[in-house]
Length: 260
Image: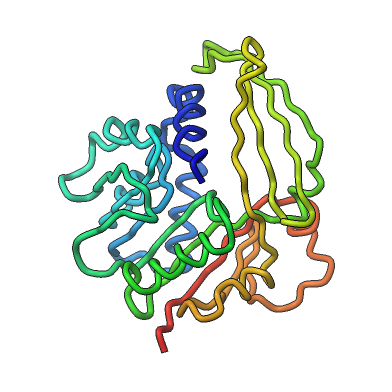
């Protein structure tokens, strides 16, 4: 996992000036938090917070938020949070496999668009920390999980991103996606057109809902619902579900903490 900090810091340097802002995606995430956890004020931990835009919007909705990210992306969060009351948002630049957080357990733990970094053992270690250190009994964890069915369809795809200085994008970039059907890992590789020999990649372990349920065994967390696009359903058979089979590259897993 040595690639994580460099990949997200460097891509954040490419895109941060354009993308470090609260958007409709962040508001939609807060709406999902309210759908699954209720709207009353809560203590929320956000892992892999990136630019902290979702954390800022969560705090604006009345919650007390701690946001953790290992990369330089989180440095943008200080400016985004300038209108928040003191204590509404705490930014922590650290590795969430090692960070120590003070205070009582959280009501909600969120990991938007990031679960799957590392090996199965890494995911289980993270889930163990969520269950035993951070999430109160009866609390809810919301994890965006990479969907193997759609990532597999993108194997071999390439994209060419042209600069758009008026929108804050100053780099000409190429992207190539591959998918390993044995390990169920998507590899997302980027490079600047002016420097093709220096490439950076992220590696995303993808899980079907059934695989995720197996991964949760013994952690004290249980998969109780799945949201795919606009649909939320129990983790029961869904034959022909187009959103998972063809359309959405991730889905939201709703986990309940039942330490018994």
